[in-house]
Length: 277
Image (cartoon, rainbow, N blue to C red; front, side, top):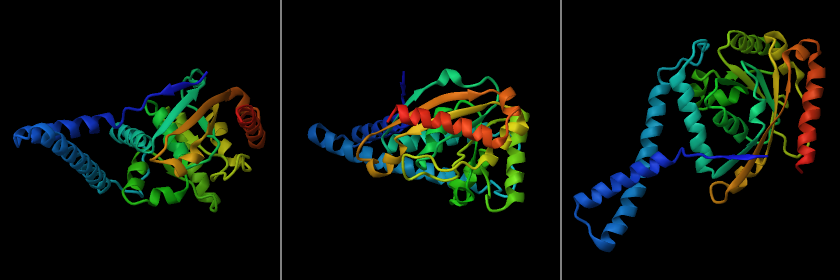
């Protein structure tokens, strides 16, 4: 059974905006309808100012991050910041997350693989697992986004160049090291890019080398509904459904080829997608 995960990321913004607006109205001695009208105006202004201050904070932090420096050491502040930012994006986009299978999360570090429908997929997964250490493997373009790319890099989001085997291997080895040291689990989308339809795209099975080399289990996740967010947000609510469908144990991973692991993960994803259609 699915459980709905509450997202209170915007609540502090509303409370602070309301408190500032009320204080200004009282300070300026507004009463009656004037109080109500000016309260709404001041609250909207305070909300906008808070967004501006948050953007300035991110820009300031980004100045001190070297995008060329591998992020080996843990960065709890940036991890919490990224997790909170993901929650904000979901809240602003009016995305409600329903999850099933949390009890399947392995003890210790693991490789998370999931189908890919939208840019919101890593946002939803990252926010849901924000209290765990989870580092994503992403396309290089995402780390070139001004300000945001540097913040993601500090939170150990790793770029993988699929057109350059040597660079891709370097990323895979870095991900393996994170898991082996117990520093972080790793998330990746084996399709490599977003699927425009209901069918899964061919898997890039090299992703499963991470689990083989790290000798860790593979957690198979399935996401549905995220492809609708772009059309609906922020005017209509989107229901996003996330299944942690299966775990391939580390011992089984060690005995299989990467294409066999990929076939098993794909079969699991297809089964969930077919059952819930």
